Image 1 (spheres, helix red, strand yellow):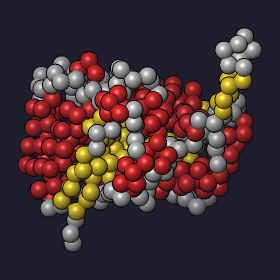
Image 2 (spheres, rainbow, N blue to C red):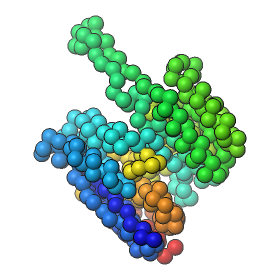
Image 3 (cartoon, rainbow, N blue to C red):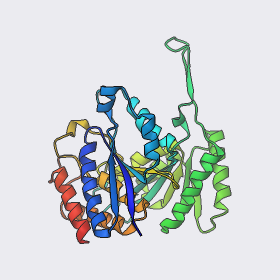
Image 4 (cartoon, rainbow, N blue to C red):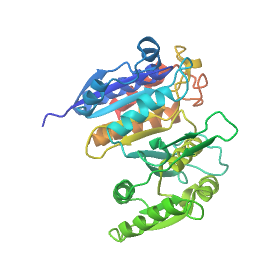
Length: 355
């Protein structure tokens, strides 16, 4: 079988090109040893392009992205561009136009990585968060009345459709089943305050749960989830939640697994093109210094090849990351690894081929 994949590469801003370069290095190494082909197509969507052309994401590019097997993103964010322009014009537009309705965030503490939670180790921190990715408060529904006056009113509406909620929950149940750990799915919401949206999520959750008798289910308010993620992270297997709550608790998850330097995520449409990225921002103050940690981008690459069905390649990358963390790195923060960005990429690529 000809295993060939067309992958769009968007290095983006700041340190994005540096970390993507190392992820591509690892991808090329495992593709050679595992016998598949990765055809890389580079796109310059970024703050620099916007400053030069006034364009974020052209319509023609959206159609091109639809034809790819996957998208590999570095980072979006430029100090010379007003916040929100690039995020809405590139990131959110890709999510909405490609209907990437699942955001998947593994929260996994690897051996040798420090967590700020005292007394917890890799056996305690290993769960996943599934976030609805195209609805909720991020749809942009709302507006202003009497803007700029003492009587100003700002309205931001959370849009939750039965279709959007159900497909997210079904993905979560299937993921929990395939993950085959505790087979426990926790719904995160706020039923005591957000009455209408939470009622929809809870009703559909219970209905879909009836089709998955092998999956244990429970519910917790988002504030309780935040407390328990810190106090008892071992309680969780898979958490499913809406767009806003997911945005918040995934960053908390990144911190308890060791920080943004190791946190990766996926924006998924299970039936079409999906996008994979490190969770951290563009970190422009570190750009060009060869000090940024590329492991989050490499872990995003691991998620991408796993999603494409290259399970052995994904396993090679993950095991290589674990070995580099255990045997080489002094820390995960920029400038504290004991190695340059490129050297870390070299180490992971070498281990991935040998394992």
